[in-house]
Length: 396
Image (cartoon, rainbow, N blue to C red; front, side, top):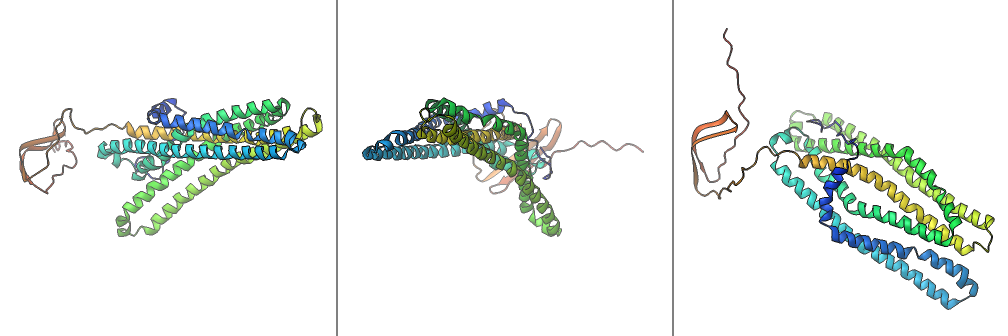
């Protein structure tokens, strides 16, 4: 990490290390039960919503040609029911995962804060305060979302793809292969931009860290700034840091916007091919118009999980880098701590007398030697610094 420099980027380019993710699983295991419930609700909601195209296919191919008005009302009510049930289950799942995410944030921040309370002064002297703060705030926010929603969403999107593919092949095998034809194109584009996209968002994180570090130091040190009339100079530094953040943000946004643009165009192309192949190539006896409508609906649904998985990939990579920074802080050694079995001092009442006190941080380098003094209630004693051995002056 940068030492006493707000304009030096943190190193977030470390390779993917699964041990950091495994270490973070302790926070997930604490919330295992609500996460399992949320996953089951999500899977049930997805399965129910996928029945809507089948209902539409039956209505177009059977109910409407038969002019069965009562059956049409019944199927319409059933489709409305599937939508309502799917929305209700998704809402319950969202509330559960919101609570789980906030609980994970609370646990990680509590562990970080407790450890920061025990670290020596040198840790804070060697680091910009803003870069410590961003680990407790920004990095924990990003990590908690991945640890809670990210894992469930990743599994759920895989399950969605399997469900959608199963429904598609159950409806029509040939048109299913037409839907899958755009997948190699998407994978090729992802291979070209994925590393650039990941590095772009890491650069955004670095510039945000630098900006927060300087902002915190500027606010806490405003008295010194005004004393030495540095307002304009500091404003110039802040403008430069804010400009760097804006530049990196816009660069990352361009890469991020390219993915939904690609997915939307591929989905539109695939749905067009489904209509062309279904209406012009295949015979009406093999493929009805209801089948084509159902397949176009499944094709539109098929690409959404792929888009979500590509975004989750970046989130996981960045989260592991953030976890490394968080665990780096938690692994900082506590150099001054109570000895085993130390007894807590009782509340001070009246006067405390110290007789013949000797105190040292390191053996042989005493700060106090055979000192006696009294401390009254409300008074405090501060021991600052440590003695440095001084060589005796050489003889002339």
